[in-house]
Amino acid sequence: MKHIKDNYNGSVQLRCVVCGATDKFDSNEDNSYIKCTNCGKEYFGGYDELVEYNQQEINEAVEAKVEEIKNDLDKELQNMFRNAFKGNKYIKVK
Image: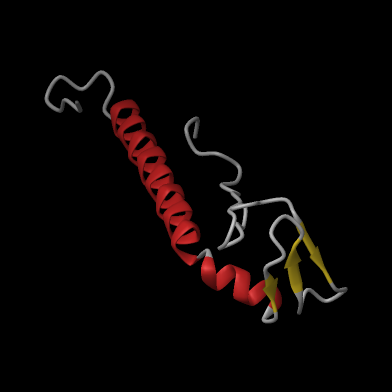
């Protein structure tokens, strides 16, 4: 399988809902409280609240990854069929 990757890991940078900063967060030890050091916005729901605010971006990243996997599987299946029927003059795979 040439086209299938070993893994399809991805990540989404969480953004502050006020200023859009992605790397300006301070948090307590268990991430139950987060503060944006850029604008001062406090997330009293911590990490879960930040994830909730960023849910659309997360969903878009998941959909893009699913599409990538579908495309890779499609290519791999086409190659498998092409190779399976290589040399057969009655069956052609496009």
